[in-house]
Amino acid sequence: QVPLVESGGGSVQAGGSLRLSCASAGYQFTFYCMGWFRQAPGKEREGIAFISAGGGSTYYLEAVKGRFTISRDNDKKTLYLQMNSLKPEDTGMYYCAAVQNRKCRAGAAEMDVSFWGQGTQVTVSS
Image (tube, rainbow, N blue to C red; front, side):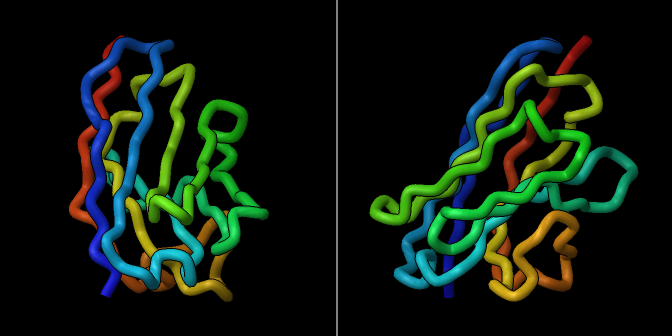
């Protein structure tokens, strides 16, 4: 198991920044591609950013490219998502996920996820 716990969500005005963290107590963290998904109100959950197990490759949904940065610290077993220039359409529940390595790419789907965090809410007001 790879228990995942997100933190760092909150409310911010458009144009602001937030940094999400996802801590793992499992040693298997370093073996997995990791990703962030979000679910906007009334919409399906979508993958927005992914990073390979070693951290050398990153992949982004076009809508967040240039504004969001995914990173990981394998020594601390922690995943991050730096979100800048936030827009109201970024509002949603954000989930960290351990993704099957062979599925590590932009557009990875829910079915590609092995483990989920519980989610953290991000609200961006205009």
